[in-house]
Image 1 (cartoon, rainbow, N blue to C red):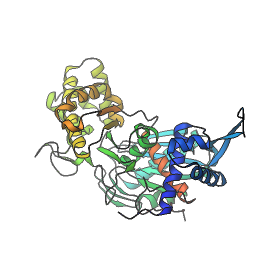
Image 2: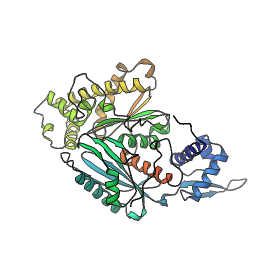
Image 3: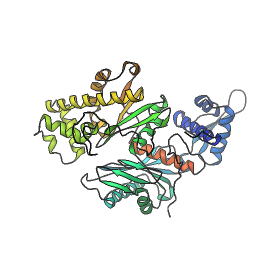
Length: 415
């Protein structure tokens, strides 16, 4: 690991100030110093820089009963607009945020999971962006950056979708394709990194230093935070928990291996499990994955016995796979997110909590928490907006080493 320089430490301190304002709301310099543990002199210096760059503004000036008036500072929402884009195999979700990362407009475009052409996917992304901008009452001229999450393995330092198994994509220069179509600065990353960053900024990361954010949907994976920094690995591929082994020589996974976690906990895995239980179940006639998951949730509400068995088996698989994650990382917080979680968490999470002690080493059990994410809205889109905000601040000399790729790469302006 390279030694941190004084510049790196200043950058980290700047983001501690920013995170404090996201957490506390309008705050005085003294409150920021107390929350972050930074010295009052450091906070005063950084606040002066933020004010000069237009990132912060004075919210109110309040008078003490004695002494000088004091200022409450806030992030200036008018500094620009940011787009966060969640691209999945079945949809594109686009949200416009202000610099406070408050949503202003949103749009969702459905994708046919059986189509995978680059032009088809890019067209869907552009349509979702245009609709979200219109819904937010903003213009492209106000957009400071676009953060786009792509499924599969992504190299954000190169702007490349390295491998998207469900689309059979290999080394697609997705950032360049989108920058050309949009005429805006674009940053691409993996959804696992996005959900981890959103949880770090707006979820349990406010109170814990290390956690795993597990996404359940078409694909399965985990965004991992250790000591308040994203775990990326050498090629940004850390967190592919969905392609770790659950059953030796088990089901064929779409990655080509057998027995992967995703082959049991991805939506296709749930469909396979239900086919084993009741091959003629009407939920299996749903042509698209979202329709299948919705049918499962509806059937569980109605007490469908085959779907109750599906939930039991899926909870069993999930508890075993999460147990391995806890034993490997010694984390105390697991947050579940994703559209499968949103639909099925009330049946899955209680059963997982009950069974986890059978799979976790005793030393890792104290204070172990498993819960659904409380991050508002779409955590992938929010995380990508946060990445884009970090990139924008990086152009002002405020980049954070805690979550950006190791290259410290900045947004590339469109030609």
